[in-house]
Image (tube, rainbow, N blue to C red; front, side, top):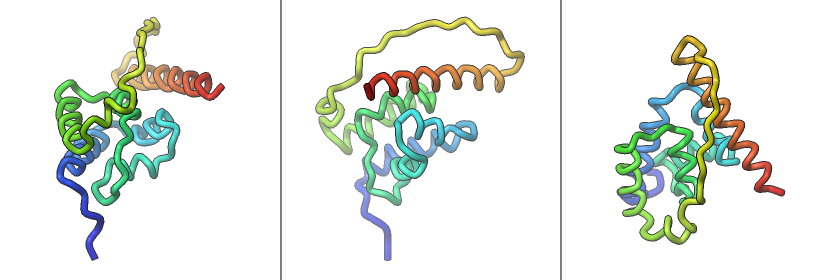
Length: 135
C-alpha cells in the first residue's frame, strides 16, 4: 500500500524545507519546534512528503528565520507554496509588522560558538514574545 497522494507543488515545498533542515546544524528541528510552539513530530510532518500536513502560512516567517533560508531558498519555497496553496498567505493576514533591535556581544572566537550565542539570543526573544502573546 502506498502513502498519501501529495500534489506536486506540496511535494516541492516540503522537499525544499527538508533539504534546508538536513543541511542545518543538529538541533535545528528542535529549535524550530520550540519557535513554532509545537513538537518535533510536527516539524517532521510538515517537512516530509509522507504526510499530508501542510505548512501553516503563519509559520512561514518563523521557519525562514530559524532555518536561515537564503533569498534564493525563500523564493524557491514560496513559489512552490503559493502554487500549492493559492492565496493562503494573503488569507492568513500576511506578515506581522516587525522591528529590529541590535545587541552587542563579544566575539566568542569561533564560528560555532558565535552561532550558538546568536541562536540562543534569537530563541530567547521568540520565547519572550510567545509568553507575552499568551497573556
